[in-house]
Length: 327
Image (tube, rainbow, N blue to C red; front, side):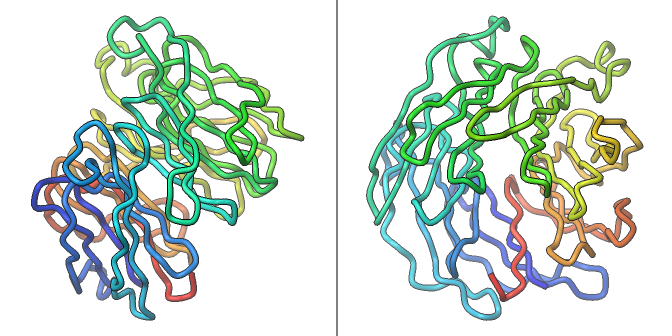
């Protein structure tokens, strides 16, 4: 099992590890500065980078061919993403979709070129972080439509495959939706909000997204330390358990959703500072967490409750992608 941990600094890069003897063993570093997010699709690893050829007002996209053992080669030309602050991407047969935080927009890249960039409009109640749109995440749904989390507008926007807006679903005001996951049933969507550290259940059908109840993950502790920030969210293979990370409390939370509603079951330390992203291996055996302030932590995940194994020091790790050689 291989895992890529990408870092975002001037000397950053994509680090390939193998998991052996309960440790992350470094195999290769591919130098690439300011990596913001990665995605593996159809035999290639795609990486968002902060700048397109030195242009600070536009981000870039680059890809590499993946070898059988995870070797990266055949680096592509850098493609402009059309806006500033690219922070998340998803890919399907229609193209590559990119969410831009600072520009509050989503782009479609197809056949190596930028096809369309759509800017959101609006704002919400927080006078510091919600004065304009901040698109933070994009998810391609099984029907080809897209869901885009907008932290600045407190909404999840539904688009068709060509980025025609179909509708929105609102979260509670001021919570700042950041990332989401789709349950295996293809209908239930769980939205993690960064600013409020909340989890909102939504239901998706025929291009319509409807919001239902919202759970505060840390209601008592948020009153004492309100400026913590939830970050990443993952769902178990059976769809019964949600996992989220929180920067500030520095934990990975375990949420039971087997009944259709959410109930916080427990948490474990992320074993580092400011857990940004984390991911679960395809076989369900391991979890790797990118602690932005310290490095990457490896957990045993056999029983759905992460058990800490070991860590490696890295500067500004932001994204985690597993590779089994079959993607």
